[in-house]
Image 1: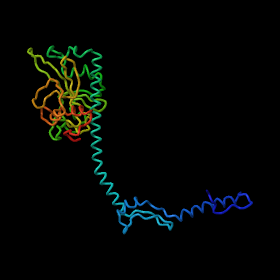
Image 2: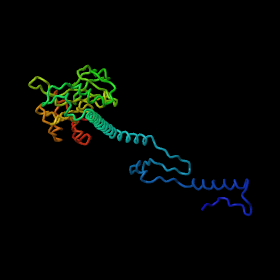
Image 3: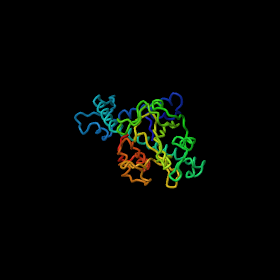
Length: 318
């Protein structure tokens, strides 16, 4: 219930100067009541700074005599040190998780991109087992080399902004492409051997080649096409198994063109394993087994098999 510090005038209406005098008196009374109170800061908050000591109490109470709450220089410095320690512990982890998430997203995005392009090619040209241009053990003498295969069946269904046998330098790379150790060079900036496609999402397809054998007539029999995709182009780190991964377009037992992350090459024997799907342990072992003939090509499959998430035992840091 509101009480007026100055009672209303008996028998008289509060109009004009009398009304405003009463209002002023009311608020002045409330201000005096507030000034006579001491603002109490909770003990838990005070203890946060005093650390149990009362001899050198850091946190002052704001009282009615005009004293102002303030922090000492020591308090400010201690707070800044605490914030710095927390930042030093958490920021590297946050950055690492961000990079991992970016790789996971782009790896899956490009996988879907190629898969959709292959699906549209099959819708346009029919069952891929009937694509006569592709050599098969039962049907040698195909007319398509690797680039012709890409140009006919995949590239028309992918948004490409630039294509050709460019060097990495011409595509804006300032460093060569490295093996996972970050020191050994896999592809030099001046390399123009492989056809490259720059996509509108910033990725770069490196049409590495195809696998096959020569039949008795000396004709090449292709049974897989494969590529490397640099997920973020020239941005870096430009390293295999970190931002560059191998994708595979093999023929199945019926001669159909399929698509997956690369997995058919056995890094231990140096041979192809007839598309027997490997276990996690096998892929992890192959991902670690890096050589000039392996190139960490199985590492993308390791992420795919884990639901497009980088597994905890992934052998390379991002």
